Amino acid sequence: MPAFKDLSGKRFHRLTVIERVPIAPKNGKKRTFWRVICDCGKEKVTDGALLAGGHSKSCGCLQRETVAAASIARKRPHKDLRDIWYQIRERCCNPSNKAFSFYGASGICLCPEWKSSVWSFVNYVLDHIGPRPSSGHTIDRINGKMGYLPGNIRWATRKEQSRNRKSNLVVEIDGIKGCLKEVCEKLNLSYTQMLYKIGKLKQDPQTAAATVRGIGM
Image 1 (cartoon, rainbow, N blue to C red):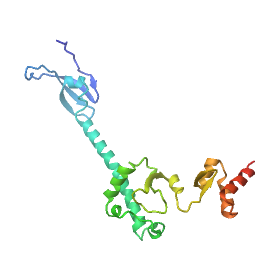
Image 2: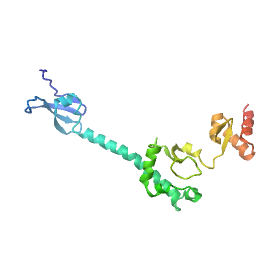
Image 3: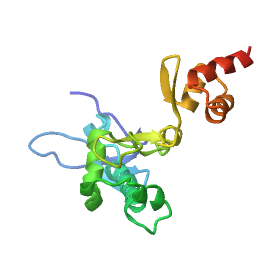
Image 4: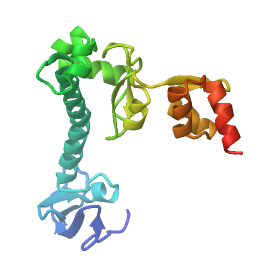
């Protein structure tokens, strides 16, 4: 028979043992119970075996906090997406919205199913493009000339979105295709000079790149 182990004063997670509590054994099984106090100030009596085995960690407050945190984690992406949905719907469908002229009035529409149901939009996003990667990401249209439709949305940062505007100048230089600013960064070309030569002097992108490289030599 193992020797009695006094747990008085010992700490188990959030519980500190106060004293042993004499409780008559049930079904012939001898068990040792202890009065403990939780960090939150609540006392309870628990089985010593549960304490030692790490199965009794608090008065119950830890579990409640864990459940609450999980609930918030589940609701948070929904709230973010509901806010994003509302903003998209406003600029696409509300003529009084300041951005309507750039969206709804310009033919940028919101999928009819998403327009009538925020949860249809939320479920599509979570199932197809996943939760929001960070607070710096928002919903972007892959093809800037099309609306907010299934298959045409993604998560993108502000920088990525600015390079996906339909007004951006798309070029191909040395086999690299993309918006002018992005291509210039990849090829270490001066964006200001390239924009001047292509926009003002009407040079084709490859010729402009050659002259800019000549200037830098």
